[in-house]
Length: 235
Image 1 (tube, helix red, strand yellow):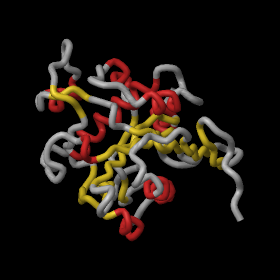
Image 2 (image 1 turned 180 degrees about the horizontal axis):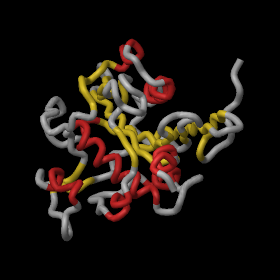
Image 3 (image 1 turned 120 degrees about the vertical axis):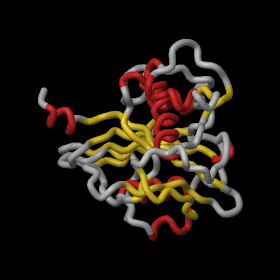
């Protein structure tokens, strides 16, 4: 398989929506992708990225909520849920410097990509991750991802929520954006759709029993629900 084919293959990915002050003035953490990025250049996005092969082997101090783990098994390879949760914690750390974890020592050698996270004295933890949305990038894009969106309350983050000093340079202008103002930014279409789902969950701390799935393939774009039926047509 050529390098170009590798790049255009669909990759599993995890995206993290951190929600702060949800009952008073809800805000979400976003950053801007670079102008030269192959995927969604200049757009404001949530932290996230593709699952790495090593993610399946990284231990979690706590698992996903059972309902979320169950939804992640639908229309997906067995065991992928663990890797997605690990990828979510890793991407949040790499792109923002925020820690979603529990204090503890790693059982054995620490993978290279986790050295800086482990140095904080934490193990990745998934109990605060709520699977709320899934979207498949439409055909014809330079990158295609089967992205699972995880909502996490900022109260589950360890450390200072405004300290981004450990973040990589993949996202610029990291900031907490009031939920009501988010659509003023240059957002990808799917991000606007997800924002509507997040807005509907602000007052509900429980993970959803049914998850929207925006499925795009060569034949059609379908709005489905995992553990449910196709969503009714509007209008």
